[in-house]
Image 1: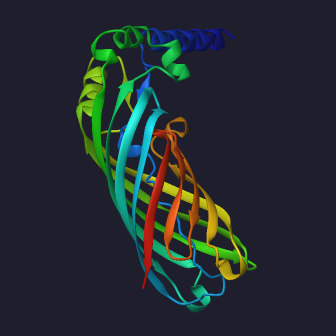
Image 2 (image 1 turned 90 degrees about the horizontal axis):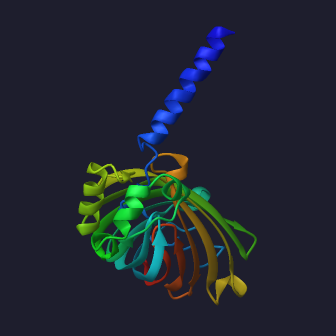
Image 3 (image 1 turned 180 degrees about the vertical axis):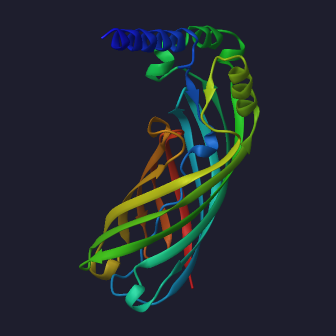
Length: 267
């Protein structure tokens, strides 16, 4: 019994020590750890089982979004992707490689529970001149994805994929969050460069017989960086015209709401 009491007391002391020393500091992501705004484009026709190659170019942007302990995020950029679809019996399978870049600006914020409860010094810094200014960032991102696209009848589209996303970036935002970490005011989840597994699932419908009016697709992506509470996500609702043009709305947990548009060329 005495040993149990001693163990509980030791645990309590350790917990209070960690709490008081500020180990549970507010966190910050690299903006490169946001999901790429590259929507998955299905085959135009549900009857097609031919091998295909395609190239897609796109652009995206958002105004005044929110992320993890950042707000007023304004960003924009572009991307290009290459996809290979298998043919015959394995026609649902595909491989894609995408690369893109973005730049923008933001302000530091305190908008998570850990920040609200354990960040008096950080919140005091937010009230200073430095804490209220805008900080810039730029990032380059690459993604490799392997998956399957499945047709349920002529109209319903289902699919999933998995792979890895890389990022490299810099800017005054990254410099400042490194400085804040050195001062023990902030904990950085990511370095300026990194990579993490990524997954994607989607569901949608072709419009008209054989998709003659295009298709609509809802997609949910996850980037598994660090612990479960640090994962970033994105939701895209996109319309794809039969000619290859597309456009849609994007919600990103690091960037907020935005728009994307582009064009796919099939060979």
